[in-house]
Image (cartoon, rainbow, N blue to C red; front, top):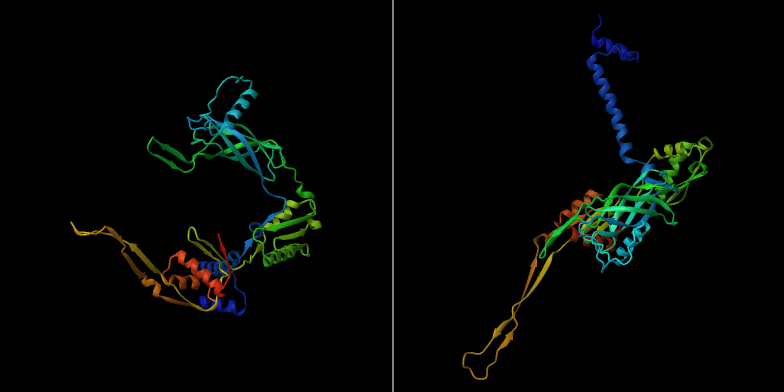
Length: 396
């Protein structure tokens, strides 16, 4: 009877390995090694690429903005005042007259009513009867919209046509409270939402299947990315159907195999993977001190020193007056000025950034100086002026 080692040696000699001939422990090891190899080869592709669906938008498939003017009723005395918002009273009178209520000769105070603007986004393929979320914002001097109800409000598109009608109870996240001497406000009590508060009454006509070409608009225009998108699409179709027109647009001719089936064509394109390229950019917000540095940012060899010098000038004027019962003296103000200079110990550090450093090296070098984000913004701008920073700086 052959031993286990002799059995494996004979199988290897014949270049044949039978999966059934391997014992249970060896089966587990074989499966684990196979899965590990597949995992190692699959991870870089997933991490390095993005779907075309996440990089582009399809020309013609977009949302449309709707807007309307309406009234919110049922407020607890926190609505518009007649002095600052007379249009609210006019709207109330017009609404009541449309409902058959005679308001002539009556003085109305709209303290429980507020005039609002209603906005919503209508999707490209929304159908009649579907519902939309709407946003409500006060346009008068109402203090709080909590507990209010929006009455029927038509929502118009840019062409002046009514596409939806909104109505419902408001959801407000903020509040305001106070008395005669003090008040407190949290959030924004004069703006809210109505989930599913509008019903679509008119559709947008867009015949997608009738298109002979498909234009893909890159969300971040780039020459290299547009070229890569067209390349992978051509590899799918097997022809030169995709052509980059500019850094933001890739035109794709619909092949005969997808004629009349644009949805399948778009689905196949959206699932393709592309490695997007991007410009080296540094985005800074001086108001909040936020700095965003892209991975493509490179720095030439440069030495950086940051000095935090503080000069403080203190004025302490003193009164000089003559001795009691002195002759000819007068009281005078004698100025006294004290000037102090302080230098932060962290400002004495000197850091050297080598040529071609990556993002992590750049951050480590700047952190070695022990500076705050606002000083780092000034350093990045100085690096750009010196020509050592190979990136664009965008100030928000």
